[in-house]
Image (cartoon, rainbow, N blue to C red; front, side):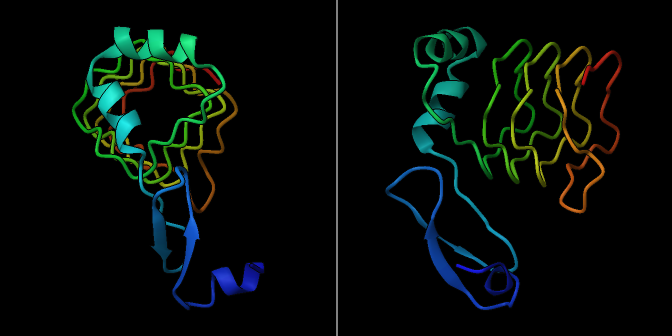
Length: 140
C-alpha cells in the first residue's frame, strides 16, 4: 500500500497486531489490542512482569486498549504497541515505556513519575496526550 493511499480517505482493511483481527482504517491506522495481552495485564503488574520476562520475544499489542485508571506502577511495557490506548488516570510510576509506540496514546491525568519514556517523540502531530500528566523525574 502506498503512503498516499493511507491518507486519501478511502477505507481499507489490513492486519494489525494479532493475526485474527482485520481492522478498518480511515485517515491513518486504527488497531485493536490483542485481548489475551490486555487480560494478562489486568491480572496485575507482578504476573505481567513475570510473563514478559518469560516471553521476551512476543510483540505485545495493547493498541487502542482502555487501560484508564489502572495501577501499572513498575510495569514492564518496553517495546509495547500502545497506539491510541487510553491510560488516563493510570499510575505508571517507575513503568518502563522505552521503545514503545505511544503515538496518539492518551495519558490525561496519568502519573508518570520516575517512568522511563526512553527517546519518545512527544511533540509530533501524532503525539500522545499528556494533559495534567505528572512527569516528575520521568526519564528519556
